[in-house]
Amino acid sequence: MFWMSGNMTKYISVEGILLLSLLSYVIRFLIYASVSNPWHALPAEALRGATFACFWAASTSHAHKISPVGLTTTMLGFMQGIYGGIGQSMGSLIGGGLSAFMGTAKAFYFYAGVDSAILCFFCLYFALTKVSTKERIS
Image 1 (cartoon, rainbow, N blue to C red):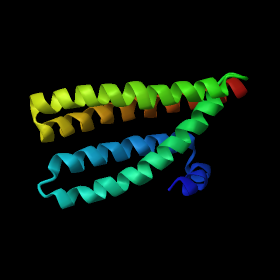
Image 2: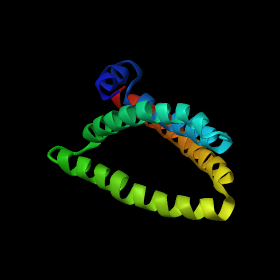
Image 3: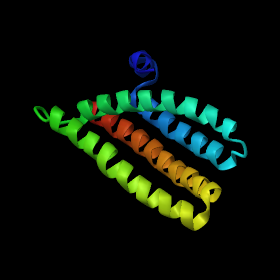
């Protein structure tokens, strides 16, 4: 999937790929919440492969695009540290705690709701920053 992500980014845009990745996380969480047979989780796992490859390629491109001159490698290091270090560690701790507290299905519905809110926030953010960028250019 990584080999296709460059072409997908050209057609959809980096921001579009990031938004689609968030949407696919919502879909995956809803699938996991409704699974009654372990085989039903396979579509979500297949979606994960495509989602992660596109997300990671678009994130790297976005970090490169917004980084100050000379700090691209540092920004990519921060991105990796936040995603792979803080994000996965806190996700495991908080997600495990919520699953134990709420039950697995309810926890995945909760994750889908939180991710939907984040998706809405980023849609608004990207829309507003596009407008403000266009206003600065004009």
